[in-house]
Image 1 (cartoon, helix red, strand yellow):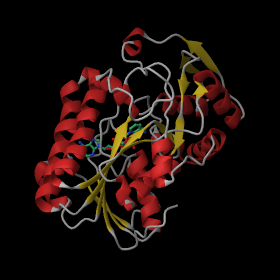
Image 2 (tube, protein in one colour):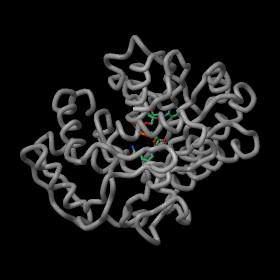
Image 3 (tube, helix red, strand yellow):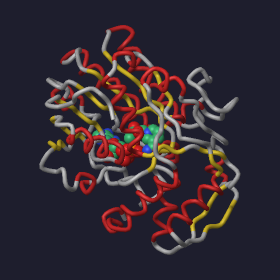
Image 4 (cartoon, protein in one colour):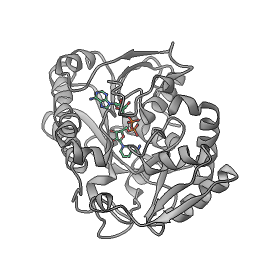
Length: 328
Ligand SMILES: NC(=O)c1ccc[n+]([C@@H]2O[C@H](COP(=O)([O-])OP(=O)(O)OC[C@H]3O[C@@H](n4cnc5c(N)ncnc54)[C@H](O)[C@@H]3O)[C@@H](O)[C@H]2O)c1
């Protein structure tokens, strides 16, 4: 996946019991890294101990909240890498509880970086940012030069979190890299509800034999399979060309939501959905069509998404067919 050796390297993953963090942990454990997972396991969020089933004896887990400055000051010490993925991910929750989102996605990010500056300035940090920062695209595909115009509280706070990482590189020389992720899917994604992605709840309803709702079927999106996202994190960690850089992560090709639903039903062998218009509270913070231009990471680090959407759905459905009760 990447030619840098993580064997025996000390790695801290915040949000490590969540979807992407736990998949990243699996890859790092395979490469012989010493992995420490920090996660608050707040029930409404995506953390789940089941996500580390099979590797629980090969990772260390610390149930801490990244808002706890003292814990973070201690936990960053001695680490070679920090994959900073802890976050409040729901756009709707960020509108209903804006201060919680502010604390986790903005304030805590600053204190994590302060902890690095004071206690481990040689650490390499990769931050999980989001395409939500762009807001409604002026043009497609969206490259990193596109204006940033977040449409919700979550987008503003993630933008601050991201810029603190860049600032700490530019001012203090801490090696930080930022990945702006698009919809990421795969085993261990949150399917209980739509807090992580609408696809989660589609998959749950499909597997329960119920019809799911597709809002505005013509809307375009791109999807990254989680293993491809993980490879981007590892490449950004491993290569100094990534320091101080922001990279879009995208999917192999854009697809309408209706075609996405068709593909998902096909992968499952059966299923039904209804096309509806957007509910008004969601429409206000909807970004319309989006898909990423990821040429910068392709040319800088050689990353491109390998897994097709059909393969992604096959792997994801196979996982939940076996593990559904642990994710409801
Ligand atoms: N999944 C996507 O499609 C997507 C898209 C764009 C950006 N991202 C970003 O990637 C990161 C990981 O997302 P994910 O999809 O794995 O979501 P996730 O919800 O599965 O993972 C986030 C983890 O962070 C933990 N967490 C939340 N608040 C915390 C706190 N205060 N202290 C400690 N841990 C806390 C949660 O318990 C959870 O395990 C997030 O920062 C998210 O904003 C994800």
